[in-house]
Image (cartoon, rainbow, N blue to C red; front, side):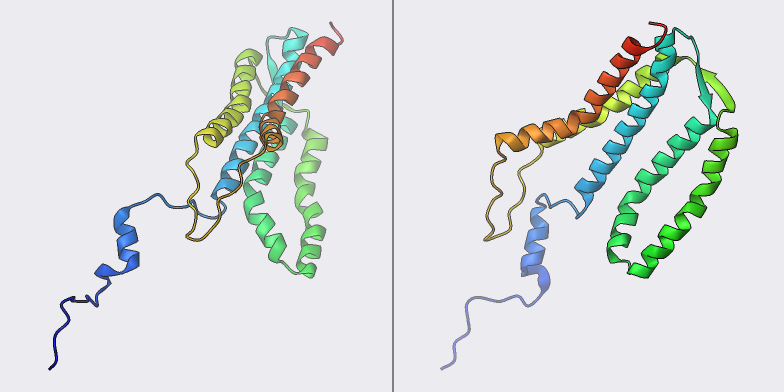
Length: 206
């Protein structure tokens, strides 16, 4: 005699593991490359702050009330911003590119850079406008300090990583690795502070 199974199996996806996991709404792992992009953006902001602070330190050390903004300053700053923005796209392309394509890029890059370089050489000293150096230096210092503070807070208070079933947790960072992380995180701030102090100490008028 045939008996029916008391457990009714649902053939729909409502009882699937994927549906159950989605219903839990648990935190997910960040997409691949997200941490690298955040690090790149913060490093770029810090580099911009470092360069601008270095330019503002000269009129402050000389006692001038104006920061003369020349054409070569803006071109250099724009080039640095474009370079930092293109790094996430260029590096994967270089890794996947064939050798002859790399040769083409290497040969064409000087022609692409020739226009801005010629403009810097012939018209680089052209004065565009002047700015007060004190607020520029303060703004640059904020740009220089904000990224390492953000990275330090994000690193300290980040959630524990999600471990795949059957996987082993990552080992706890050693003291040496934590010191190296802190040093790498604050290296631009230290360099900017030393350069700022040396500019005042070694300026000819002083």
